[in-house]
Length: 185
Image (cartoon, rainbow, N blue to C red; front, side):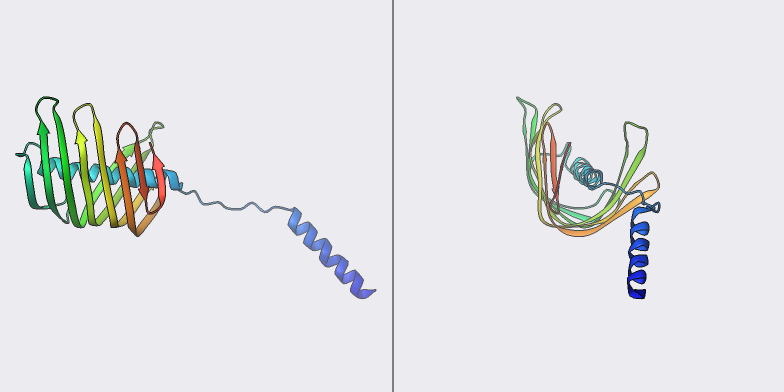
């Protein structure tokens, strides 16, 4: 009988404790979707800055340029560029070989809240396709890109230190696949 009373009390305590819900403290976080969109935007803007700082307005043809990244690190740019005077379209078939390239991307969302992405890149990526003032069809592909950095928003910071396949296709929409996480905007 004593064992039955002890068992009944234990079950009652278990039932009471499982029914009462303590307030759980949930830490605010940055969703995967927002995180990878911000990283994708930082990558695109970094690549565009590398292109604009080194190739915009430069004679088209073969290129072999060693330069500094937008905020540090080094970039070897190899490949070709072309320009269609009739349609005002630039064509690129380039590879950026990056070592420790640093970049910061800041963005204010529709709610007036700021996002800051700071990344450092190492690896090779393509900058291939065509674009004009009104048209973009550019792809960035990397079989092995190392990205370290952070995305910060509203006092929350999420870190990245990963490497792998990165694919970004830019046209009327952008589709980015970063280490197996696909986002579009």
